[in-house]
Length: 232
Ligand code: OGA
Ligand code: MN
Image 1 (cartoon, rainbow, N blue to C red):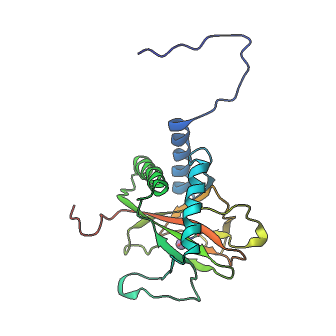
Image 2: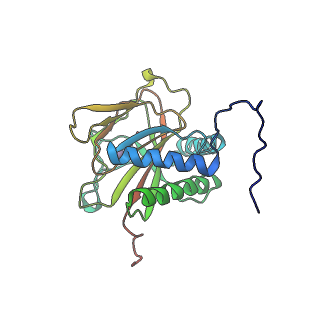
Image 3: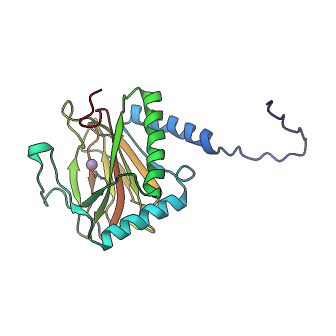
């Protein structure tokens, strides 16, 4: 099959080139990789990459989990040091298993992110984990790192927000701090549906400010360790 050459026409309007599908994903992945390498973080809309209907379906799932009290109080620390501490973290979570149609579509997107980040940054990502999170009015998550160097295998953190019409007065912003001077705030992100943030799990301190309204999101971590129990 030969590509059909475009029909030359002097009268053709100079339309902006619309990237679609693969090309859009690829140029966005390039921007993600450059930002992670140079700054350690990126806040971006995923409009055009994640269909609005998928965002809506994920939102429907988390609303149902919330309504049926199916989320659990989140903890801090790993293994035996895992505890619940309401002075640090107050959200409630439910892990995704990828089984519903919506979760399966989201996992396909996360697969392409994992593959793209490995290709562009040689991160050696092998898997990801993801949980829904809800913050009730008054809930927050104090400044923290998502993993500790050398101890954990969380490499890249990603958060996808699922809230409609979020206003600054609703609180719950994500504050991202400079990885080189940790008292400098680099970004204050509204958790608005279709926005996604990425940062290096071991390097970038961040904090969820107190929410004034129930706040819905999905947090994901791309990891470099194999699935537990599988020797590779
Ligand atoms: C986390 C986290 C940020 C957010 O779950 O570890 O930092 O904006 N979440 O929800
Ligand atoms: Mn975090």
